Image (tube, rainbow, N blue to C red):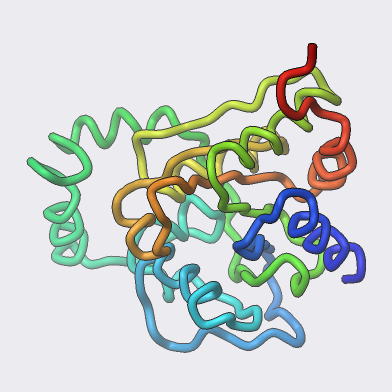
Length: 228
């Protein structure tokens, strides 16, 4: 856990990242020394917003805690829904002033997203400094700071970081990082931004945990300002 405290400290000291980085860890056994979220369920992004708003200790989720498709895209599968629940959900995302014009458009978008074929039973979420050996780390900051995280990666590896947008926050964020074990960035969507209380300048950056040391170690090596 000590290295994660150092990583979190580095993020605060490098350029004043103000939001705590959030860590996600999938598992198939009941996590030790972590409290369950409880029996309540909500939108996935709304639950995560509580970590910042209430400064909560880490907790673990099951698919039954998640009202939306976030559990599927983050790796632990959707809860079973009745046809009535499914149709009600579709009515909230299909049509004018909603997520997609038609179900066909939504289906087309989902075909462009990597999918998980092995789902886990639990997911631990919490501040980076409080979660041991997570899978993925989420950093929320303004575009300039996100750009510099990405530049640290490309400076060292020569690889581009690919961003996704146009879908929900969870769809844009988890699948690509799980598949490539690298990093991605996105602006989220209206629902996630509202429930997480992001301001207009903030965006999401997701980094595979194995890559986090490389990004932080090389942050000091990238260009700052206009070098002549």
